[in-house]
Every structure is written in C-alpha cells, then in structure tokens.
Amino acid sequence: MKIYTQRLKTSDLTADQIALLETQVQEKNYLYLDFDTRQRSRFKTNNERNEPVGIDLPRTDTLKSGCVLSNQQGDLIQVMAADQTLVCVTADDGFMLMKGAYHLGNRHVPLMITPNALYFEPDHVLESMLQNLGLSTEQVQAPFEPETGAYKGGHAHNHAHSHSHDHSHGNAHSHSNNSHEHSHSHD
Image (cartoon, rainbow, N blue to C red; front, side, top):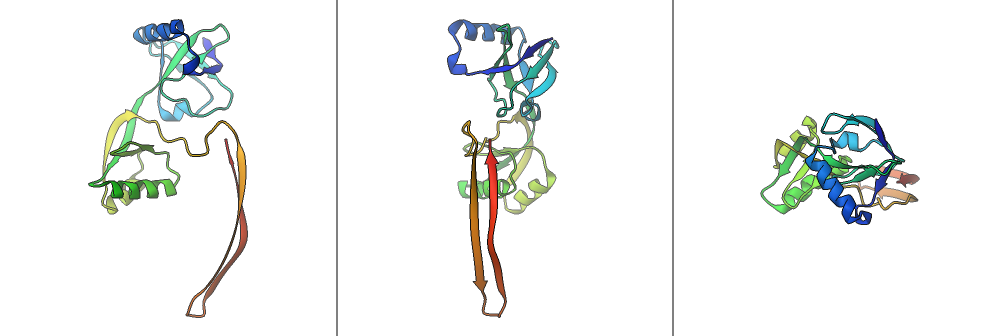
C-alpha cells in the first residue's frame, strides 16, 4: 500500500506532473472523498480502482477538491470531493439568504456559500429553523467545500476580549457582567 505523506502546492506542479495526474484520473487512480474524510490527516482508503492507499499528513487544513498528495518515492495522487447528501438553502431574495447564513454561522455550522444558495450537511433542526424563517430547503447530492473561516492563513494566533456590561432598566432590575475573557486559538 502506498502511503502519501505530503501535500503539494498545485502552483508548484510541473507540466509533466499535471499530465501524469490527468492520466491517473482517466485510469481511476485518484481519491474520491467526502468532507468528513477530507478533514482527517491520517486514514486508510481506496482509490477509485479499489486499491488501498494510506494518508499520513501533518496536521493541516481540510483537503480541498483538487489537492495533490505525494509519497516519499515521488508518486502523486489527486483528491476529489465526493458527492454527498447536503441541504440546499435558497430564498426569493439575497437578504433572506444572508439571514439564513447569519443564523447558520451563529451555530458554527460548516457552510458552503454560493451566489444563490447555501449548503450544509443534513440536520433536521436547522432545516426546520430555516423554513420557519421563510427559506426553502431541499436535499441534494453535491461535493461539499465549506468556507474555511476568516482566520485560516497558515498561522496560529490568539486574541483575548474583555467585555464589561452594566445595564440599568426602568424596572429596578439590572444586569452586571464584568470582564469575562475569551481566548481562541485558530490554526
């Protein structure tokens, strides 16, 4: 079994490597993986010819469709995003679609955003919430490439927030929440 241990930048591939990958796709020597598998850095799978393949990458971002992996012998294999069941969210206007994206983002749902639709992995509670907001949902089969997030840049950084809230209301009822901190680490 070949074990692939390195992710290559597609911009660094030579013309010969690109031609080799095109031939391999025609010969079904590529990986067709769903989103959950593409998030992992170590796993065993089969290529499309049903030959066993091992992946042992350093902890990195999710493998995107089109990623190219290499092993120590210089063999290459390309990763393709497999079709999977998704919920497609549409609306009559862009504002309603933005509201749907806001509510899904508030719940930290992996979300694929296109100009006319939102896509996420099936969750009947979220579907019901979106329908109650007036959005249309339907299950579809499609590759899933969710947004990676604004802080993904190949470096880690931490930030802390300090908030102080002191609200008074006319009904002699007040809230006080003094300086709680949040520390986030983004890879």
